[in-house]
Image (tube, rainbow, N blue to C red):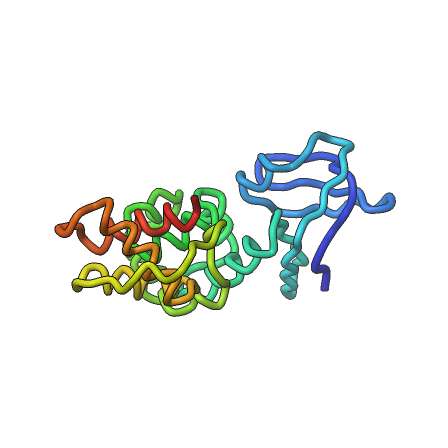
Length: 202
């Protein structure tokens, strides 16, 4: 199996690119997001590859990060989601945005993906809510811990959502405590999650 390609960008189209590795051109299928991130023709690129082997075809799917490739695999564990839909989702949403949407049960954000209707989006939210932690935290910067406990049902739900995303309980509590101070005592869990993720990624 091919897990990574490092070579020169030779050509590209609407959903594919050809990577020249020592004179051999590998055609890889990419999301619009990945294609947009590719360097100019003739420049060096390193891509993480998912290889699909079927009876009648051999296809390579390319991603700019291991995290994106893991999401591609995870999305296809959901009933009704194949490689085409998984690639479309990742072309519409970054791994960070997708994780946030799952944490906040934001079906509307996922249905913005072409070809993904409400039923498929709902299955994504239900079937992936407990699998996201396997991918690790999606934030960019840790917070200092020890700010104190959070109180209230909405805050508790928000902390639970962040820990399900892979954040440490103390880190999640601090983020939601900060969010609570900003949003006020009447804030909903969804508002606190959004503000908490913003603080963690800041």
